[in-house]
Length: 424
Image (tube, rainbow, N blue to C red; front, side):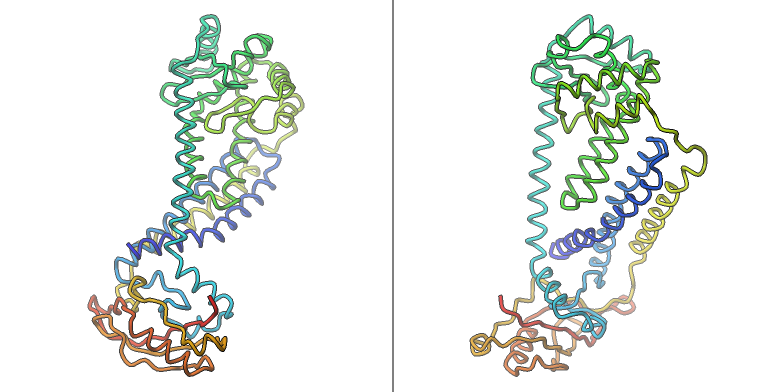
């Protein structure tokens, strides 16, 4: 359990820089594709969001596999024993201190992440239940149901699409994948001209035809798991923006009247409607941008040149995932000794040293026997205070290790470890 917690903690921490790389790559690619079609930009954004989930997932699998094999996938400088400590000692002391604190609080980090994921999941579940209840108990309108069914046939939708009227919404929304339903506010039936409301319903049917509700649920799952990274939210928002433009294009093409949908969106903007996050709503995205896109579409690049940035991002993503996957499958046979976190408590700070505010970094050399016990420790580099050095040695004696593995068998090995004495 300890290995799994530490693997998850460091996977989440590594995603901070991984998400930033993916976000910057997506931003650059989408900037180069500003004149491409919304469908092309949508695919780029979806690829980036998939990478946000796939990269850390594969790294987590790799860390867990290495931990099960007794490997050193979780090794870190500082309090955590590691190979190559000569290289780690070149890191700035402030960074070592940060790594030490993170290693010591890995469980707290995972618990906080799990609590936030649970809270967001409950919020999403409540939204889904609310939409489901509205679909079951909403009113019906025979005339508009027939009109919606006829329109669905024009879109080539073979499934039955239900229409429900509710007073608790301000904008039409689409919910459900297998049994789709369009929820229409009662106020719209009374206040919006029928031809404009029909245009909004055409937009909702475009979402039904593309199965956007299912994709939106998957988006919400990624947002929930990686809630702490702004790049995830930005990429997800771009997906929703491009998705609305795609639905507008499909609806306008089917109706044959782009200006009618633009007028409907303008009326929606005037009435200042809101949206449901877990459903696909007609007023998603920037309404004014969508209106301009319908009325005055810009000339867009076509052909293979518009697809190049998307191919570059996809190739980069495939390369990253392939390398991570290859790494996860190639569990090393020979491994170095690794500290067992739950069996190594923090050394006691000598009272005199603490009163005198003595602090520093001590580097210890020691052996790890084949049964994981510490043997023969010595001070390679002193902290500058003999009492702190000796306290670090005494604390190390209480630690347990997973022994090094060679040829599939545990062996004795020599290691180095740093301990940074800093005030709590």
